[in-house]
Image 1 (tube, rainbow, N blue to C red):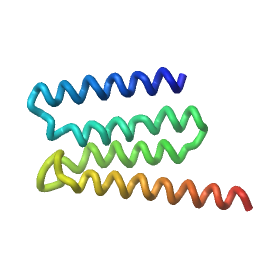
Image 2: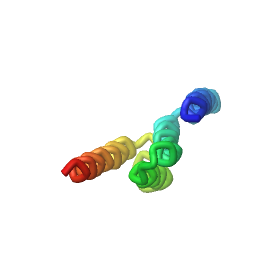
Image 3: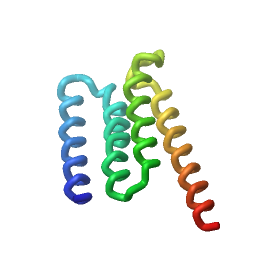
Length: 104
């Protein structure tokens, strides 16, 4: 199940990347990558039974939907990458905290 999801994700990403490039919308590629990364957390949450992945996915998807319209350089603004890094770092910190408490 996870292998099929992963294969589908990469094929879709490949097609989306080429579609964006060929239609002159390559500035949206970073946003598309962030969207795929965010969406991939939802099936991971189900597969591994870790609700924190759903929160991470929701944070990334919300960021992808908001930042191109709020940042001064649109979808190619580096603010999106900074935001994604912050969401992922907070997710990792929370997971480490939960794991540390569960071992006590």
